[in-house]
Image 1 (cartoon, rainbow, N blue to C red):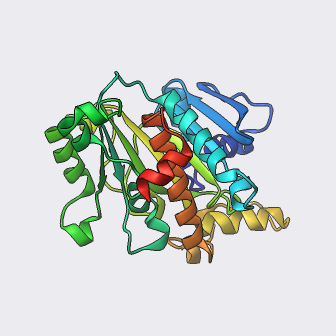
Image 2: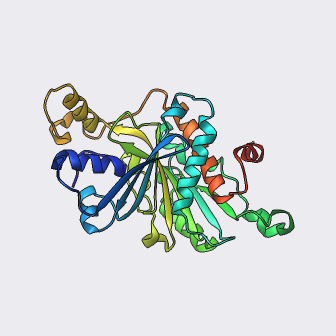
Image 3: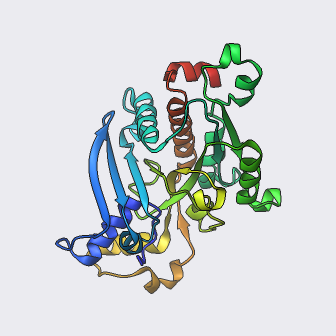
Length: 300
């Protein structure tokens, strides 16, 4: 089991390789790099139990999209990022025509690094009611519902309980869940999006993991979309010490940093940018007939 904390499969594979040595092959895991709309994409496939044990993550596909150009405000970066996310998300979705999709924004909107899920839900084009009530006008749209599940401390309900109840009532074909994650490196915070077909554990990014949302708990596919907004302080300290040539420490050796998380001072702006990119990307994946300009008109 890897000791340094990260929710990103690409980083978990890198950590394993660092510990095992560059010449050691990681059995049960396949990784490849590619590009999409000018952004780097890393795809990690965990193929069996051996790979799952090595990386500490369930079997499945994990796609990491690096959006450095968005952070630098490059011209055209936003629509390119939304289209890139839509393409990668479409590759994970296996939906019959006209099947309902439930998009869930996880997290606490009162805590800035944890509000990416609720803010994303505000950018989703919800169409279930329109398709059902006015099929003559909206029949070409996929029915989509959105939910900002909240957290136990503000609703008195576990997000998993609420989502399970909604899934039982609406019977969607798939859930797309958006949440905050933790990264090993500050270089990935606010500029990376991970998609996976393995589901998600709400609250994992801020160290408050709850009941998992996946096919096993909900009975339908759960596609997770996560954004690293925090770094574990002990993990960060170990990496910084190693980079400075001060020795190779493990997080357990830095007792004073245990339980602390670090986030950038401009995390509020980063969360807003990424929530919009994710929302638009999900819209494009679920409604492929739309463009970024169309979504601007529909959600404004």
